[in-house]
Length: 368
Ligand SMILES: NC(=O)c1ccc[n+]([C@@H]2O[C@H](COP(=O)([O-])OP(=O)(O)OC[C@H]3O[C@@H](n4cnc5c(N)ncnc54)[C@H](O)[C@@H]3O)[C@@H](O)[C@H]2O)c1
Ligand SMILES: [Fe+2]
Image 1 (cartoon, rainbow, N blue to C red):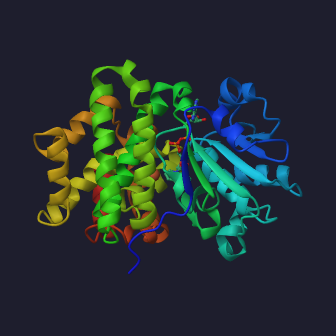
Image 2 (cartoon, protein in one colour):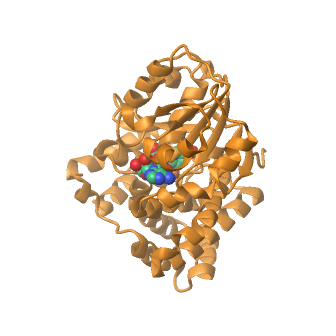
């Protein structure tokens, strides 16, 4: 049994300028980012790198349409290194671009993942504290014809280097900042509860949970302390990425994709919908299972009843709205449950308790 693996080399710089100088970024390199991330920080470094801005190809999280537009734009060009600077959206697109190997349709890559080949070094600089995507081998794409998000997984999509630079968190708007560590927290918790968890992944999960909850406790009391915790939260997201990159995520992520894909709900916010209800389901089904250790961990950080205390703390950071507030209707419940069972077996297989289509339907109904 494989116990643990981290592929990218992990680096940290306080400023992008230090990174750019250390690696002599220049005209043969491509930076994939957003203009509003590039302008305040990267442009002033005068690297002369080539650039492509994600928002010019569509808004929201990655879709096949957006990625295909970028693949066509970059077709026939080659780069010494690709540097992705952004949230999970930019990162997941960059992973496909770096490994597309001439393909111009990401749907073809889903059909033939063996054709992926990374042809340039890939540096990933996360600018949100959520996805951990800088250390994972997966890219999550809204496949518009299927009407759901799906993960494309390949060794070829590992970055060569994951680069932690806290400077970028300072331009992140509060809502994006607040929602992103929820995703990291869910990565940490789902990987902790996964049947594939090992002593190694548990260490990363536990440390990520502690860092995020401590940061959240401070930020819930004083929003102006965000800058102080940016480095810790980025690190926590990276730890959580390492944990779930090895042990996987489970039911929360599985249920999130049909809903998030249809109603274009941001990934962290969409996961948040199902996080507490799924933990309650696990506790009801197997109160003496691994959930017990999670509850101990939560009680140690937050006191009270672990899961309820967690729910209360998260509620102080971001409001949890019912699915109907995003436009969901009764008919979605069965549609989403069936889509989840049909398209998300990889994730459902890593649930800590077996879950049936009826259970999934009940949780969607509870969240409507
Ligand atoms: N591949 C993986 O391992 C993995 C894991 C979890 C999530 N994801 C994917 O990541 C995506 C979500 O990523 P996210 O939560 O980081 O959100 P995001 O990348 O969509 O970013 C949220 C918003 O903040 C903006 N933004 C990001 N950084 C900024 C900065 N420094 N300054 C100003 N604005 C900034 C973005 O442009 C966007 O509008 C989803 O598509 C999800 O499926 C992937
Ligand atoms: Fe996630």
